[in-house]
Length: 102
Image 1: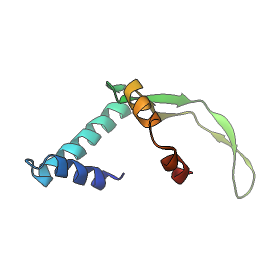
Image 2 (image 1 turned 90 degrees about the vertical axis):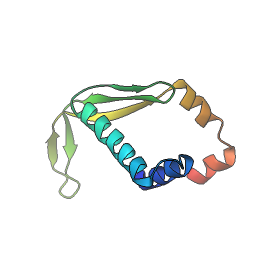
Image 3 (image 1 turned 180 degrees about the vertical axis):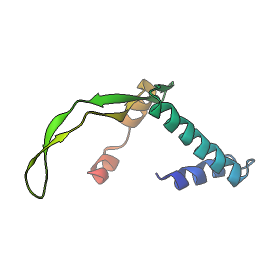
Image 4 (image 1 turned 60 degrees about the horizontal axis):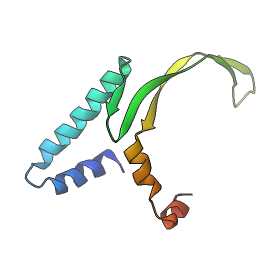
């Protein structure tokens, strides 16, 4: 699901709200979450999951064109850990759907 599909789905479910209001709310939510993560904060949404940063230490990599060794700096990457309710809900997906995704 893309951001625009999410906005459309929410606007349909919340028909009493203007599309523009839903769009602003979704964009504001995502911007606030991005700012929180980029400042090192952890985001926890009960029943859904938590977003945090994981540190990837420096390592040696390879340039795919030349094959030369390259030092890759350490960095932080976003990480999502699903909550129990989300894991259980996803685990009840029909097997047919799982085969389509592979």
